[in-house]
Image (cartoon, rainbow, N blue to C red):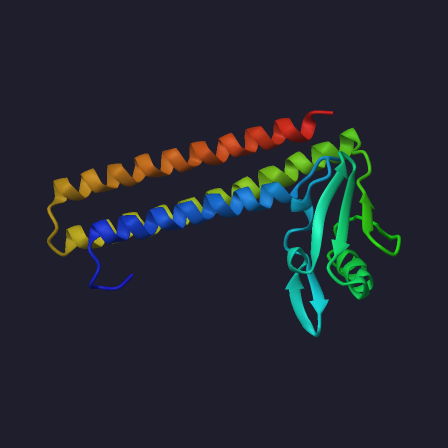
Length: 189
């Protein structure tokens, strides 16, 4: 953080960082599926399209045929092979089947053991988000303390630190809420 910013700007930047951590957590949690087909499972999969890595959503229509089947219909038939290859290379544990028109992916049912592993994976993502939140908190508190040392009123600095703590509690609660919802979703058979 540079010398020219004030505490208000620091807090706004910190909150932006916190929002980013929550958004990242939500995106990562949406990729974890417990046996239910969702086109989000393929978000982030890049397909080689005319020599350029392109998001799959930009080269094909992604759909959900039923609760256990994803369908991918490429805009160009010659993209069937590269789409299959991209899914294999993404190492998602999914096996695409090409029927000449569509690429279909059957989502296998999830065992209880796998569900527990997915919950653990979700919690690990939650811990990563908490680390990001703690890092943002640390930066904001350090900035406030530096400003107090440089002449900012001490009681106003304490109030700002309390604001930061309240903000952090709010984001921790959000993380816990998202993890609880995801665990319920994973463990529901």
